Image 1: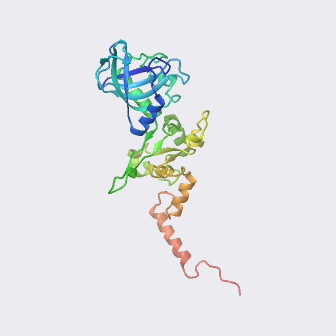
Image 2: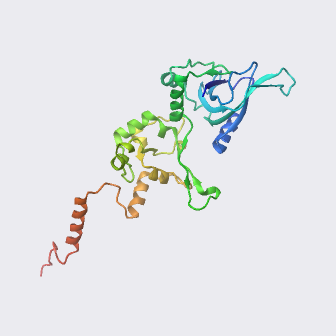
Length: 296
C-alpha cells in the first residue's frame, strides 16, 4: 500500500476546526476531511496518509495525524463560485493536539529516508517503501495514546460494558521504558507477577509501564524521570490503577488491596518453602511447643 505525507499550514487559506476534529477522533475514532489542491492530487484511494503541520504555526512543525485516502481525486466548484479545485477525501483515524506533534529532529533521527522540512507539500510527498515501517513504528511509540484491549462483561453488551485502559505517551516512550525496566526490573511493582518467569521467552516485553502521577496533573514544562515517575505493572494491576470511575490508584493502594484480599504479593513460592510454612504453622499451633511456661 502506498503512503503519502500531506502538508498542512494552520495559518493558511484552508482553515478547519482542528481542535474539534481531535475531539471527534477521540470520541468516534474517525474524522472525514476533504483535502483540496489547485491541481490533481496523485493519491489514489487506499493511500495511507500522514498529516504534517507546518508553516508559521506557533505550535511548531511535525507529524500530527494519520488516516487513509478514501476517494479517487475529483474536481468540484467551491461555494463562492470560484475556479474548480481538485479534492480527495481523507478519513483520519488519529490526530494529536496542536503542540504535541512529533518534532522534526525526532523524525529525522528515526526516519532518515524522508526529507523532513518546514514546508512539506500540501498535495502530498510520497513515502518511500523502505521508510514506511520506521514512520509507523515512530507513530505507534509517540503518537496518540494507545487504547488497551476492551474488557467485555460476559453475557451482555450494554453501552458501559466495554472499558479500556488509556496509556499516555510517557508510558509508551521506548527510551523511558528501557530505563524504567533497567532500574525496577520486569516484575509487576504491585503484585510481583513476572511474565518471563511464568511464560519464559514468550513473555518478554509484555509488562506494562505505569505513570505514577497522572500526566494531566503536570505542568507543560514537566521533564520525565523514568526511574521516579514510571513503574512496571502487569495488565491486571494496570487496569485497577486506572479505574473507570474515581481517581487513579497508587501502587501502594494496589498492594493494600492485594494484601487485604488475602493474597501473597505474587512471589513464586517453591515446594520447599510451602512445606516449611506448613511445618512452622504446626509448630506454632502445637500444644505448648516452644512456649515459655509461666514462672510460679
